[in-house]
Image 1 (tube, rainbow, N blue to C red):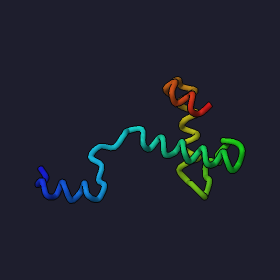
Image 2 (image 1 turned 90 degrees about the vertical axis):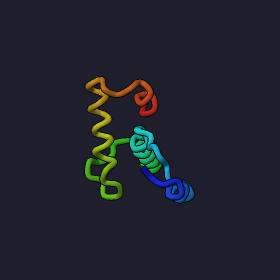
Image 3 (image 1 turned 180 degrees about the vertical axis):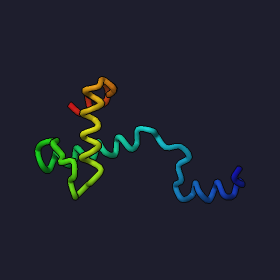
Length: 79
């Protein structure tokens, strides 16, 4: 376990002890929204040089939707 003084040092830096499992998804979602704002569509190329992870993420969301593995909340956000 960490000593209390080390805990305080980490917390003073803004250290978060738990990370939301949705935070990565939400980050990509925000990136997709920015892409849509610029390009007026969500057809991100699979190998988009400006943000290489975004294209595969969009593809995965479409696959999850087709396989009925995407939550209704996420479907609503992406529609």
